[in-house]
Amino acid sequence: MAGYTDSKQDHLRRLRRIEGQARGLQRMVEDDKYCIDILTQVSATTSALQSFALSLLEEHMAHCVAEAAQKGGAEAEIKVKEAADAIARLVRS
Image (cartoon, rainbow, N blue to C red; front, side, top):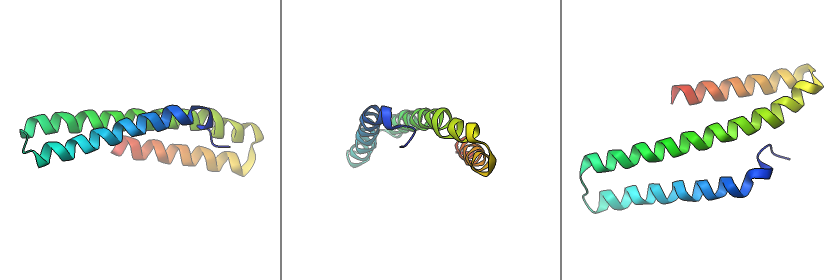
């Protein structure tokens, strides 16, 4: 079971909203909207994606990483490394 299973519907709702924001950006470009207005919407979409990613990461750590840490051993080390790598990717983006 994935760590986000309990929140799956909420996540899907958020992703549909983000998808709508991305489509809105396409429409803005198609309609030759002002550059700054488009950039403002890019910023909002980026923030929404980052917020989603942080929420998913939090659930991963609370479920998958915590469960592996309780078991200990190599699996725990792998899960902690995966989480650290995911955090590093988010920080760099």
